[in-house]
Length: 94
Image 1 (tube, rainbow, N blue to C red):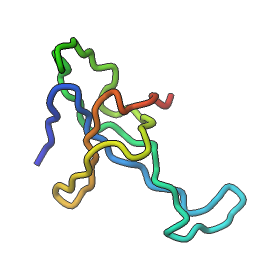
Image 2: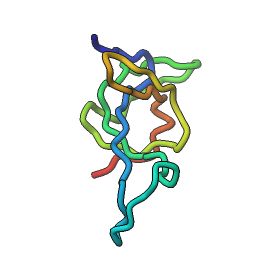
Image 3: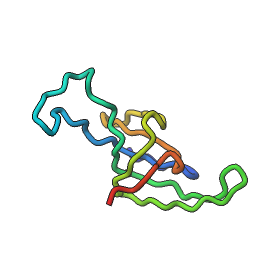
Image 4: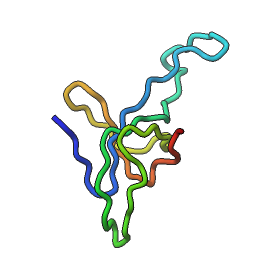
């Protein structure tokens, strides 16, 4: 099954949180921060949203930084995805 986002929405898959720090300390489950880097899986068509023309600036496969607690989490075919609006994306990682 595929997800096709509408309007200015983007489907992303969060990357795995680091389990060790750069110095080699293993983090407990509660100490891990929610990851903010994600990979784009699908992009909506844009168009007119709330009376304003929206152009989509991201594409499938881009790695992006998102707002920490934004979006709606969904589970489909055993995979976890998050659906966010394009304005919740802070930057593209290059």
